[in-house]
Image (cartoon, rainbow, N blue to C red; front, side, top):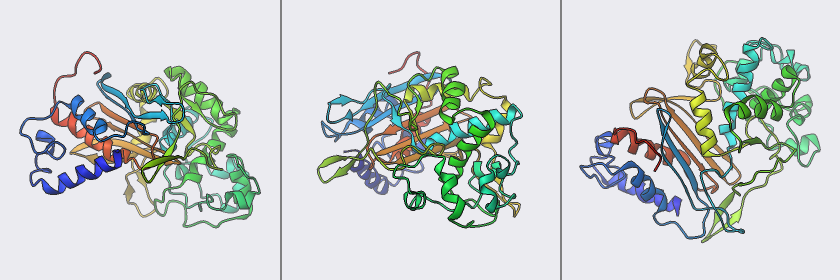
Length: 380
């Protein structure tokens, strides 16, 4: 199984003295310190196919460089009960990878002059007046707002068994105190992005799902991507979430908070996410100077900076500049990494809670960066 496979690789990493030094030279950490690099496509197959149970949840993967798909494949099952395999057009719940679409919606509205990043949140959400006027839209985008997390108390505080995003305002009406002054520090906040979804609705006059699907997904041709709010839109090929239970698997697809969007809620495919990835190299959605804000570290009140932009982590990985984000909700584990100077992107979507999608993405990226070969004309 995938988790066991990763554990085996971790053991190999510890036992291979040349692993780190040769990582870019021969992908030695993964493939036994061979002097000649393993073909990246076969390396991905070996990583994701070996030791996999015949009827188990799995992973969809895609690798793209300079707009050309180098690898796309599905491994394992999307739906165990119906025996449906994972394919590259299977839709997965993206969890927190959804945040980049929320951030893009805000950037689009800022470009249109319907809001400004440094507007007080109370300008569009006056229901939050007790949190003061110092809290801005920028603080929500960068997880520096200091809002308390209502996830553990949402149902109890609102009295709603399956709350929607709008119920965040009801929760904050009488519950919770700021954790810190806005801008004081970075602390990851799902509620902040749920409030951003409500801000998008107030500023645009559209439902959040309609805005994202109509202004982002449709123009990019992301036909298998939806915002899964209380409309419960249908998807032709949807992965079901699972977690491991002993030698078997149990459903892990439902949660009372599943219809809260902004922080999560998007379903998409690896193929659709390539369309999104490629759009970020151009100006199809927003101007380049607008997009640049998404990849700029947030400034704190102290004058220091934290490596998070608008819905993206900003990192140096394997000596390369990259922006990335992971997601984790119910039985889904997701990851997207964009190596900006290499024009290389790796996307990993899984419907098994035990999958370490970011670790897989890192290993897959290492294979392709190590190979440094010419881009093939077609996907493998």
